[in-house]
Image 1 (spheres, each protein chain N blue to C red):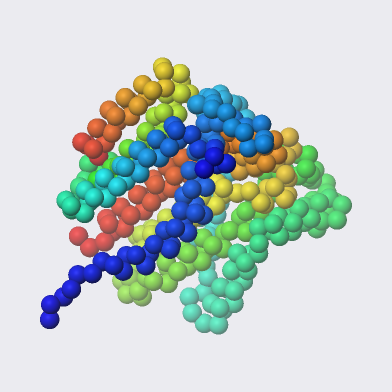
Image 2 (cartoon, rainbow over the protein chains, first blue to last red):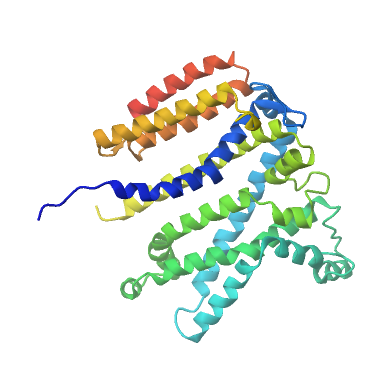
Length: 291
Length: 90
């Protein structure tokens, strides 16, 4: 039978295209449009060229926020990835405890961001919070609203509390996909525990771990709600990350132009790093695959 | 469209990007290619190289502006050189 070629089905995709254009592409274009203009309200705009970008690149405030953001993401990745892998390695492989562990692990992932923020905001308070009260009674000075170190420690521990299980669950899924034969072969060769991890488990987990790193990097790089609820960016500007600074600029001060230029830079940084991660990830897959 | 405060330069910017995307889509359909490996040791197609060019050009413009290398339009020349290098070697 003659196969007919009919490409009309492509028109069925059209509604999605329109929807995406309306909800994502055009708003993004608006940001670019605002970044080259200035407004004093009343929807009156004035051409400003590359002025906002110039201001942005000269602004200490932006560079500080960017630096803080990178430090934060680096710290939480350095803690969550190894910890998540460690947890996954120690989770039971079969039996009733598997389900118990999985449910317990996924609990923090189900809690909305602002609720996590509120939990830790109260948990850390010296007057009524369990953590703050205990530390205070132990004689450890801890006040996340005034102390730089306490504020950072609270945010980092909170993020680890909230998201390590995501890494653990992904790593666990990677581990579960390793056939028993590999472990048996390792046993016959009398491989040490470390060698089993290094040459069997780690390579097999590499794919999902890259996804975990990518997800955790992007999420932590765009973090807003939790630090906003817990510290509000303080003390001073100590925990003012990029998105907190951006919202202050765009909504607090209604500086649409500078905020738009800021957003574009933010977007470019995220795009670049995500592209690097993605490229490394797909090339790792190809290298490991059949040749 | 007045209420959205569109300007001619933004319109030109997006039209160039749209034209590039359309051109490369048509090219990809008319002349399919196999990915190749360049100096970055990653497999790239024409579209990948366009993406690397556009993203890199954005950063070239920002660096040009931040370091006050010269008048901004000249940054586009640097971008063209960069684009040629990407399409030749990456």
